[in-house]
Image (cartoon, rainbow, N blue to C red; front, side, top):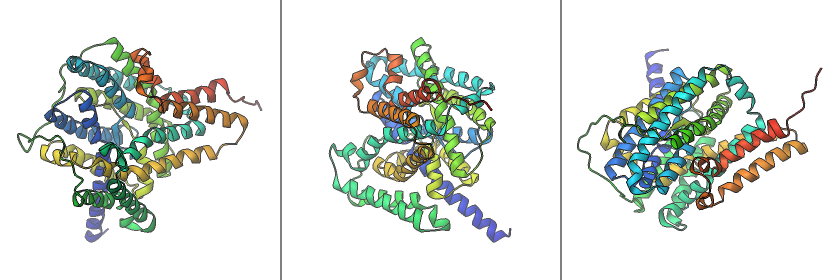
Length: 434
């Protein structure tokens, strides 16, 4: 390779790395704002939360790439961890918030250690065999279904204005159309630039139409700062929080395995059993870091497969560059502050097509199965129960004990567990002997 080709390759990797960084940002920037509001944090506390979330997201991605499953899977706040933080924050009194956050730190650390130890045990292949195409298909459909409401509320302007907003909906439609056209109708470099151009156009249209809301901001005291560990205080032990955290980490093993599986499909790679084992170990290490740096627990994001499929970026170097950018940004408060004002509607619109791809993966897995009465019953019951629970209001579960409430109120988890039971216990296939 001559010097000109090397420069071109480096430039392409850099541009694709920026895309990965933006993709990672869209999965991070909403978390500190929503969780911070649940715990009534000040603007300065939310800004610090943002910096730490960027740092851990980037660092956790690199840990998995170099020491874990070694795939192009970004790490972001797990939906279930996010839900637990919000639920506990909104249900507790303001005076209990500080202590509760310290208990959540301890919960993340202990559950991470537990998961890392589990990753060394030779049982991952048995766990992997539980995730048949039916289970994986149901999981992906439930995952997208659970998040689809947030997508449409945001891109239609309901989240921002309380009702349908034509201007916001128009901007998001234009952004989605740009991403779709570039991803499907172009080749080479342009093909991978769809989400990047879509975000730029969407953000500019928000400014042009005067829809940018300054929100809560603060003036950083310096241009450079180091994210501080244990920002919520010294971790405190609470049996209920510890139990909830361990249960959550075990349940989310399915997320780790499914993420590795679908990204392997997107990359057209055969996944080795040891990669699932190392991925679980890496997730345990990352949960410990999440607790030490006072952020929401992270997990490999299944939507990485949709991003890879949409953009066509399959090389490993760009995602490494993107993760390093996330880490660097975390040390510059002014950059973090600027990124924090990205309209959430623009971020949601940029993820719309990748999430649609994830739904397609799930449907493909189910279409490959024999349409027998047994299979249709397993699929139908799992989806009916899981999606049905998503429509129940949070107050419906107030009579359930707190540690169990975090499980039964989650349609994704209940539907997935039910599918596993139906597939492997209740309607277990009979193995015919030769």
